Image (cartoon, rainbow, N blue to C red):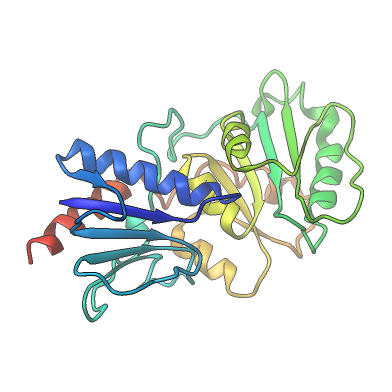
Length: 268
């Protein structure tokens, strides 16, 4: 198969990351990655809302951040009548070469807080307050490891000053490339539900999402990942930290399953 990729560029790490993981799997299975202007069998789109320009004589795979239900996850192969759908979290694309695993329970010693570009619910401040609540225990409690490495991302549209306790690393409005590097330094990402959650999952990080809308908890449960809601008291240790033992509903086989489905539909 000849496959071209059309994905969102800019401050949206997850789109590029997912596509690169899928490209690597396709090449490993003997397929060819081609440019958008070349003859192709598949055009892969990865946008929150894909442009879906003029139809081409090729199959299309749409990867995006759509509502997650038990029957309809966010990877849609679109044929002539868009009749085919990949079902459930079995198809989520996670980097199988990442040294972290979704089955291991890491020591929660490296925590990155990232709550979006503007964080309208003030989750960042509440999380920092909760971490301060536990700060005295980081060096005594074996769950936190020998030392705690905590980072916080201050998005480009916060529009407010955030008081960050001493010893916590601040990342102000990081760009696409630097965010990839930042996430790689942490084994747990605490993030507001949205694009960042899927970006971190694509990188193979353990993710604890904070759900902000009524439909989000059900989506997290379908994915089989632990979550907390924005209404919770973040200083409740059982909510904030004991839930970060891994993303148990997600394995590393999703990218292989995506390619296998593409191969099957290519020949049908």
